[in-house]
Image 1: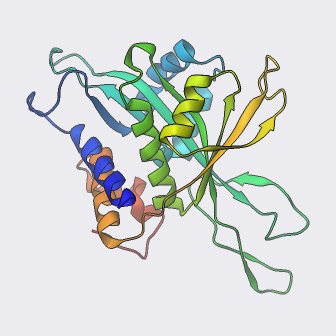
Image 2: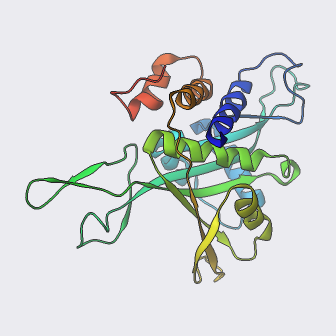
Length: 260
């Protein structure tokens, strides 16, 4: 039931970005879509205004290229703006996927980022195939401009990211780092998103502050109805261009599976 409700939320929120009628959304509502290269300036602005951990333009460019399905932005849907005015990007979330090879190969114990594809098997020394543990999602960065906080944008961005991690990559767990002093973010992660503190990373940040390592189980989007709802959300986020959706959407990761 929770999965189905979240899938509907994803679909309706994504679909709202295509709405034209002023009666559909209030000015205080948000539109959600996939990030584009042209959003990097706005994403950097959100980051600089809200977080002490800042990144270069190249970082965002590379992230959007490597993980296009895991880079989302929230726009302020102010219907009072002029037609020639672009909607304001007021928040973003970036995620990636890691595969833990520790259980698949006793000689390694590393997490490896896999741009674009999630591995399922790995050849063993005897020519067979060994199952690789399910991929783990990681939240790289989340930020919402101060004037637009406490309105649900951050939690909806995270919900969408979680579902896309599971839907596209079959990730069953997600992790993140958060400053021990960031009580507001910790409350969001624990109370609304189901995260739990799994450990402490000492002196994780450049100023020497420790970070909580937080983890959450990802709900599986498994039923046909859930996948159809989520696929409609994918189409809405990518726009009406089916060729683009085929390149950047679910078919890229499940070429033998159709959910439409």
